[in-house]
Length: 281
Image 1 (cartoon, rainbow, N blue to C red):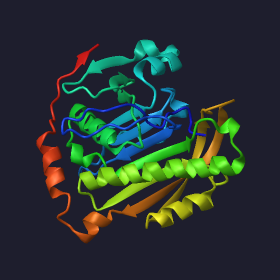
Image 2 (image 1 turned 120 degrees about the vertical axis):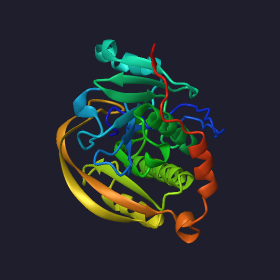
Image 3 (image 1 turned 90 degrees about the horizontal axis):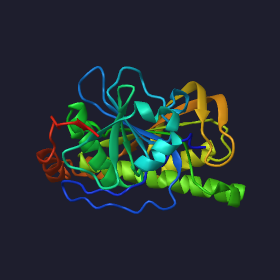
């Protein structure tokens, strides 16, 4: 189920010269980064959204500076959300990211063409989003949230194949999230997964095994109500209760060698602006 979100596609040309990655085989769902800024209202980053309609969005705490992203291109996203397209205010950024476009909807910043398995692209979007939100980019990467992430083409798969592919997709997202935190020299990666505890497409025991594989632990479980998931294929999943688990993965490079990543972080910060000009398209 990956709500009607997209798992993050697109190409990026980052100011620091980070490479882009292909977008084939990605899934839909939703992902979000939360950050520690020392403020009560911490910035939040979500990805793989497919609808701006409130019931489909990745759950986030209210009142936080926020950027949501989608796998679909600008044209695809407008087509998927045609009923709301008139209220999207598209903007230019000083240093464009190939394949990505930014807009505001209901006071929230969005980006299209974003691939959550591509750490270089995530860093580029985090930098641009932080610039637009007026916060430091290095503060925008320490919590990653996923809602109902599911691969495409499930109708042609057996149940065991679908579970395997979904776990593999989550594995790729885990790796990308860890790479992002390493680039920003953070000592851990915090990942939130919202899904029904008995989701047959993503069995909780398989998720727990994946967490163990990455040397992490589940530190919290929280019930979430009235979630709607937009199906990749077939009918949307009607409002239902779900659960959010909080996973902490250690960044071994930073834990074992505290100074590793400092130069990368310094390079990223050196190219990070905080007062980007905006102009409506």
